[in-house]
Length: 470
Image (cartoon, rainbow, N blue to C red):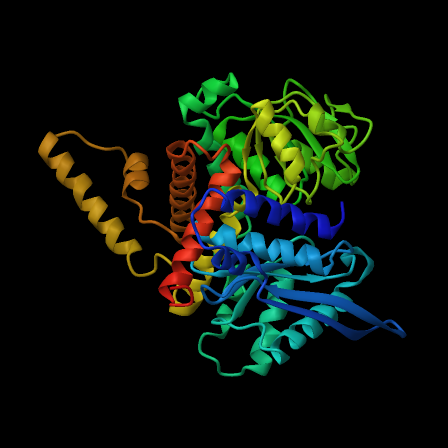
């Protein structure tokens, strides 16, 4: 399906949810529309030749500032795709109560075809174009990593921005997802995958919902298939296995897919792929005929963590999972989603379940504006307070706490602890809001529509408060 199909799929879901609200049509039209679209072409010297690079930055909604959204490097990038992703970012931020408008960027290249030096030249030139048009800044528009980019590219963006904006006090907040030593935050790399885990775990806690799916409450012991072992998929799988007790039975990647009903040790698989360059021929697992075959294999939970449009009308009837957590953006088309809902499958929507990245990006942005790491002020004070409480209990009861337990109970929170705690609180609270929105209405049929309704109401409230729509 083309990028235009992806945008239409997002807007189709929006309009369906909008029908469950009583908001004016003009206000709904404003929320749906992309406010600013910057299409650019710029030359970069690659070897002895000049290449003209196609790139985009879209700001979907300015109901909150700055706008926020990742930058992807992919040959699939086009204007409609970036507009669709920017739209999802607005709704995503609203759902998890992160005070940003939605944005997205894209550069139409295959990063595997360029050297590190060439990628740096492309990234710095793209950043320069954004600066020229006032499409980047800590209070204007804040990019982040996405498909094909990471902390390295974000560090290049930061350095380029500060070269032009020398002396800007809050300049480090112009981009998030930076390396920790370059004004980043601990926990950002794992954030989206950890958020997926928290979201799926919370969904599995509701006994009523699990009973309707023929499952028992709780995430432990459930089987999971993961499509995509990039940053999001790998962390989702590792955290689900290590902290949730989930059994990973299938994995799909660019080179193919594998399945083992008895379970796959994700750490061993990642090591195998690093050593061989492929997930195929992993000991104990069966190679499947193509990379998407595993999506149709039996499991309790399916995690599409690759690209959009992976579950379509062509394969939706073959899906056997009872829960789908959309770790990627738009992996299920609107038509296929309706088929899944009719089958009784629980689809946990992308704009909620993969919001861990933007949530921790928000924490990083706050850290950059405060110019201080989280935990610096209170860690030692809390540690001393907890130690005093333990001493009091020991004196009062006459019993002693061993050194290991005392160290565990009495420790103060580090930055990573606070980030994970804040992310968990965000994901749990947001899921409860979405579920309550659906349960209270006799008309809203699924979690995606409920998530859209929640987002639409929050964004509309901002526009009304601003006086734009009295």
